[in-house]
Image (cartoon, rainbow, N blue to C red; front, top):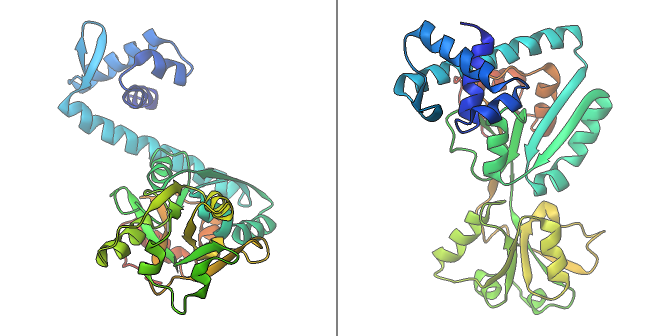
Length: 313
């Protein structure tokens, strides 16, 4: 048994049992992959894959257990390399963050700026997606940490830590009748067409829950994943917007006005997700603490190992 064989079985499973695609991803030949998998199966005394002729059609029950161990061993190999890299060069490397548009556009810029000033040798990448996608990026090893509001508690393989709480505002064009309301209410909002986030994004479930609790059916005419897109359509007069309060900038959004809606909706919590038992380089801990000062290294390590308690906010 060797690491190469483990890589082959893991990649074949990742490629949906397509040996040709696995071979291409590994820059090797299809016969070579098939041969090494056969040698591994012979050594273990069980078949990892179910075959129909020359095609792989499923994973056997022992194969699933073997694949889980192989994935874990391959992750440990990656962690070992990271240890060597950190001790040979502690201030250089790469940090990939998977996050949503709202976080990337409004919450992260000051953190990113200060981080790059402190670690000029680190290349930072921001990958954007919906909360489910950013979690998958971390689980697949495409990103080091995920930052999002929704959908972070669905995977037992992620250690999830709360960072910040935030709420919403209603944005309207200058002169809109809602600006004359003495106290903004859900009933008043529901009388107008609404533009807000797609259901998978940025606390949309909190918005729906608030209206449902008052037996109101809001008229959501446009949903989007991007706060700037929402504000653009509000400015065009197509409806009123419900966005994260952090997404309104009075200096830039001069054609709009914001009405605080914190009393109407439950606050939402932005969280960081990290793959359990991941090895984090020193600068990753530094980024996390810069974004959420209460999340020191000991707190993060406790969460990664499955111990400790929810640090709260």
